[in-house]
Length: 314
Image 1: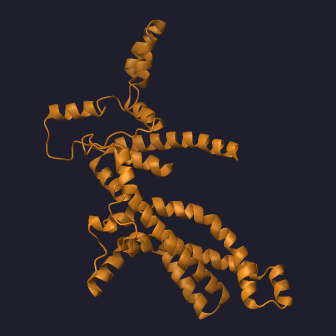
Image 2: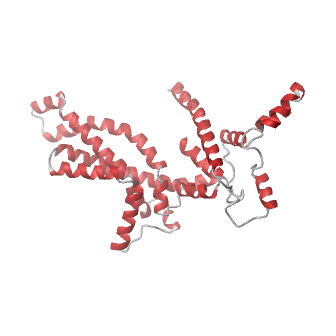
Image 3: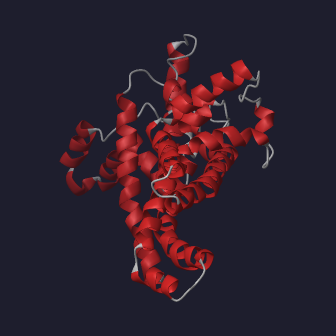
C-alpha cells in the first residue's frame, strides 16, 4: 500500500510540470497583460509593477544571455546557472514545488493565490457536494425503478428524463431555470454574497441541483443497465426458485451487486462535480473559485489562472 501511494505521488510530478507548462505558455499567448486592461497607466508605473512581479524577465530562457555565459566556459558557472534559471516559467515552476503559487496581480501583491483558493474553494466544494447528493438520492432510485418496471411507461419516462439530463448542457438548464423561476414565481436564484456564507445555506440547492443533473442522469442509466444485467444472472433465478420473496431478491441479490459499477464511477464523478462548477458559479453569481477563475482570464491575472488550474489538476 505504501509503495502504491509513493508511486502515485511520484507520477503526480510530471503531470504538474506538463499542466504548468501548457497553462503558462497558452496564457502568455493571449494579447495584453495584467496591467493593460485598467485605466491608462504611466509607462514608469507599469515598468515598476512588472519588475515587482517578475514580468520583466524573459518568459523562457534568454538564449542570447545563456550563449554568452556558455562562451565563458567553466570560468563562470554561477552566471551560467543564473541565466538558465532566470525566466518567468522556471521561477514559477520553482514556486509551485515549494507550495508558493505567487501573489495575485489584481490585489497588487496584497493577497496570495493560496489565500484566494482557501477562501473561495469551500463554496465550490459545497456546490459540488450538493450535486453529488442529488446524483445519489435521485439517480440511483430512478435507475432501480426503471429496471423493475422495464418496458412500461415508468421505464420510458425515467429514460426520457435521464436522456434529457445528459443532453442539455448545464449552462442551458441553469439559464432556463433562472428565467422560469424569475418570470413565474418572482424568485431569483441569484443571491447576495452573504447568502453563501452558511454551510447549510439554501443558496446552494439550485446551483447544486443543476450541476448534478448530468451525473444524476448518467447514474440512473448505469443503475438501470446494471440492474437488468443482474436480473438475468443464475443466482437470482436460483433465489426465486427457492421461494425467496421478491423484496429480499431485489435488495440483497440484485441491487447489492448492481451497485458495484455505480460506486466505482462515483469517485471520478464526485471529482468532476467538485471541480466543474465554473459555469454554474458564473450563472448563479456564486463567489466560488470557478467564477474567480473566469474573471482572472479576462483580467490576465496569470497567477490566479495558473494557480487554480494546477490546484484542480492535483
